[in-house]
Image (cartoon, rainbow, N blue to C red; front, side, top):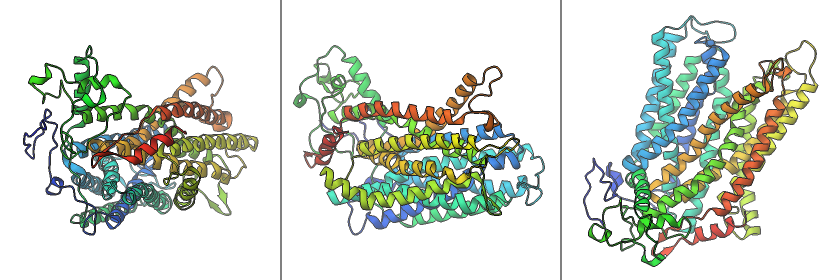
Length: 591
């Protein structure tokens, strides 16, 4: 009963739901051993992540200043353009994940998107040098740039969106490709895979640390072309190092279009709406250890969302055409669709946390800009306070891996310490505390105002607690998200699982922007300036921070309910269920 129709390298048959094999390395799934995969290859990918992140934030960290100083945009227009650009970066992650899972495979997807990334940075560097930075050294606080030509502006926008396209499509695929270097069939390799996600986020922050310190000052002083050139060099080194490991990577094949497979399950269920699902052992599945999705392991049946089981219920009409997956799907295909449905509520609950995370690049900076930011004779830019967030991530990552995991493992009996869902819950709690800390800081700032002064006498270093708390929450929330969505996603949608984390950040940007607009409309009535006016000394930004804290608390309640309802995916490993996921279910019930 298993489909035997052959597939060419350039096409996919949605009926047989077999994957396309694009590259030479994609037609085999190498076992981890001395010759392929393992930590040596993972280290190369971690270095690639750090270098690519350095290059990306070398553009993004000061983009709003480039738009206002070089392109002469006003603050509102520049802020809106940066928000749209940032959101677009993470939307492209879904495209990269889709191409990786469906057609190209992880390696080819990473390579192609990195080429676009390098090309975009190259065009950006040349454009700023030849067309925009006129006269040389302009774009700082003293020298104004000449008005840019329409040609220069258009090429500039083309280049930064090429950067967004390349970096966005590369990120989730790289995370999944790194996890592929470990075989989760053994406990040791499974633990290494989980550790990789932790170090992956660590590498991201190492790269952004350089961008948020050294490159910030280089570009702020008007040396924009030099800053973009450093980003270009970093991206080129990242690409070369990635390609250098080509012969030693562990490759996993593409599995075909998952969107088609999920739609087929819903269509087949609707077509059999009046059919009563049969018992577990009578549902349709192909014989053997491999599923009908070529290269993908079978998924064990779960009881929840039983209405979708109708798609795997064999009827008399199906007997004439058992390979028509618009009428009859295998248990594995049905469970893949169930997995997407089960993960969706959990993912929705992470969006509010991304609203918390987004405040670091917006309201935290505006708050710091009207505080006492003098350190002796030096002026400390408000944006550099994000260094405390990065240092918090780096420190908490080490503490978590070396201290909390062993301690929590002894207390809970789970060698992983806390499950991914439990960690994400902890991240929500810490994120809520960060918003409370920001609100308290704002109250104190308002109490230290002097008549006629723009800035409060309260030191900017009072922001340290809120930055540190956000950094600590990231270790639990974003690392937990990477592990959870990648680990719970079936073999055929691994990159899609990783991309959900970045998609959450994207929607967090949009939701935060929407909340600011709505709060301004509602609170700025009549002669009232509102909570977030242009002159923050006349407003109550503290109330906005407390509002986010309340929404996070409510989100936490919903999240706990969704986490308790969630059922882990059970992969059939060598004919038996994945014991680790069964243990996860037990731990989830304790959330």
